[in-house]
Length: 239
Image (spheres, rainbow, N blue to C red):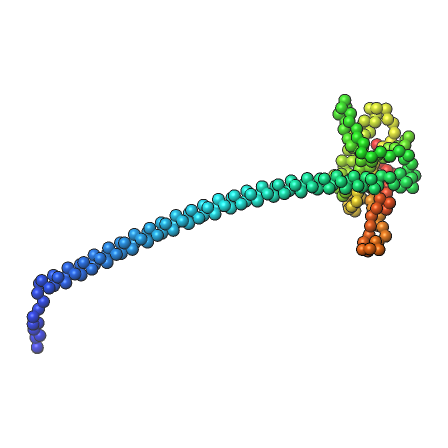
């Protein structure tokens, strides 16, 4: 068996120097890793903070935008309600002036003669707490027709008019007026359901009739001259 002999082995000093160099490199590597870890933690903390701040700012801006949008919507709705109210009142006035002059003739055709017509009257009995407004009132010595005018009457308008007629009956009895009261509902647009409801409650319904097509645009025109008075189903309700 051949034995290999090591010639000129490294000295202790050289080995020690190598070990010291390796130790320094290990320490430097550890220090660099610690520095890298510290920087990563700082970056992560800074990123988390920025994300929290951005989330808080976004949430605040969303709340501010939602509040501003809600406020603007409420203001717009209030303006629209006001404009619609003015338009509705104006339309009611127009309808009254269109319909009222011809109502007596229309009711005369149904056998009801009303020589007297009054627009926009009211009752204000403070002693008995009876208050009501009447769009159009047609009268003779025996009967009084109260007409409620709406752009587009609803079932609630019909119910309110019936309450108005009941109040009128109470007021008349308190003041010795023995005449009979009748009711009518007039509108530019009267839906089939509302019309049937009003007729079933014993009221007359006043609605536009279809006119001749306009030679200019071909559309159907409605005027105060072209409307129908439809008698209630069965006997008219009397108050």
